[in-house]
Length: 175
Image (cartoon, rainbow, N blue to C red; front, top):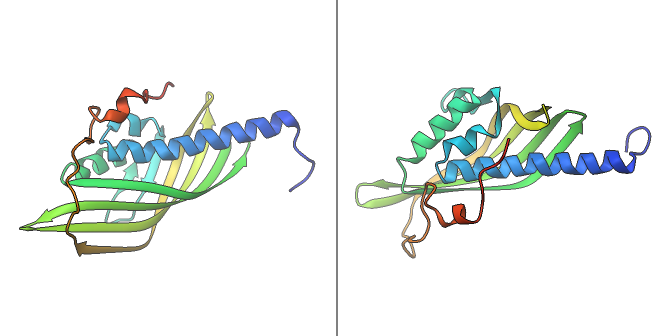
């Protein structure tokens, strides 16, 4: 602990801020898995930037969402999981590191390939007008693989759009 102890109200605000940032990290994954650009845009500040490396994408956060959604439309399916979220708060600014596993399935002739990427999102955040958003994201790829797979079953209930059953119970975020 640094300096003087936090008051109860400071501690409550820090908890609320951490939860708000964590929720946005989760919503990013939901946005790209459901191919929901509007939800994805809500995670970023208007001037936020993303650096996924020069071979993948470098530019605006909104442009990243468009790029990822367009790429995911070309796959048969994909799923992102987040873990090990660490958030360092400093008033209305924050930094975070999140471990990410992204898995995608793509057809190749008669075969089915699975691409798995283990990476980390290194995010700078700010709270503007009472709303947290990403100012800058740098993605670090720790390792990846591609391999041929044989599915055990066919996904039949979910969809990669707002027709997915999750939209019947989860509302879009409010600004």
